[in-house]
Image 1: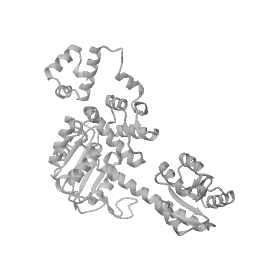
Image 2: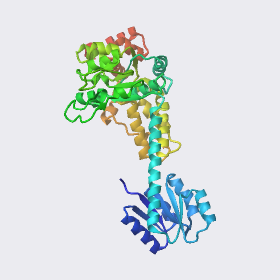
Image 3: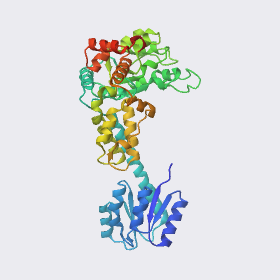
Image 4: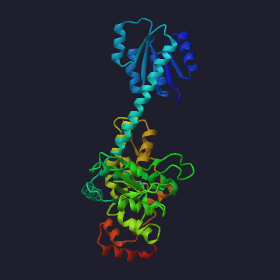
Length: 450
């Protein structure tokens, strides 16, 4: 466990050294100051958990200093020391926001107990805030924006969330498939039950089996007790199978049995278990293509894709980026205590012109870096560090290209994005299919090589 960080503000050298030495001997990390001004300077450079402050200082007193310290770190705790204690002063100190009021000569072991309790309470509050932040992130609106692609998604999902049919969410990595799955669960009749999130790509074949289905004692070496599987945990709720396209071929028939019959068998057991779960699956892969390649069972594909849903890539809804970015910044403002975070105009333009290969996840990373590495509330273009290599960024704007070459390059990239489907590319380009075919012929683009 990290040491508690204590700032001691005391102008009498003898008392300062005695308290500092005692607390350092008891594993507290210490800094000291001799005045109000010095205390502010130290706290700005070194965030303390608790400030122990003598009431009377050469340039003020503890109660005058308290609001200035809180302005630097709203979560810092203050313990006031005084040789001239009175009930009136103690009450005033607590009302002003001090946590404790101790009289000199202070009993050092008693002070240590007070500090440890204060720091423990501070840690508890942080854990609660982290849990609250996690819940807040889980409840993020996946439909921020008003671009046609996201409006279509909202319309489909709102109509199917109340059903019990399996849903297959498809989309590129980082588009927010897990957020959408959680939203569907929380807007379904199963909202009062568990939502169990399983990342199929992050588990080996054996581990995925035991995590999903559980096992009986003695089922394999190391199975010392019975283990309840995540499917049982999700009983009457929803199980979200993220990256189902990566599931091992030996596990696929067992999942099919769960989807079709609501039954499965624990490893090492001789009887089936019955479970009532709604299955939501997600993948960034082309599952139909994997079926054709023999890598994914056709019957499982058709069962999990009763309701197919596609999450658009961020580049398909660039008009929504400012609203999405502000929502993310608002969550960081709460997490990091940074009020009023916003984007400058040049930052908005930079965000909208970037291609976002990592989608919303990459957008979050870029914005979090900017928040952590800047002190102000306004995020400018210079604060944004994109993850795409610089040479690729440079390729997005090449002043040597003619307008005809730029058009050809964009059409090629759009066809690649559409998997060679001219109809899909034409729809995204907002042009008639016949016009796109004409331009493909005009630029000499070979569809077979796209």
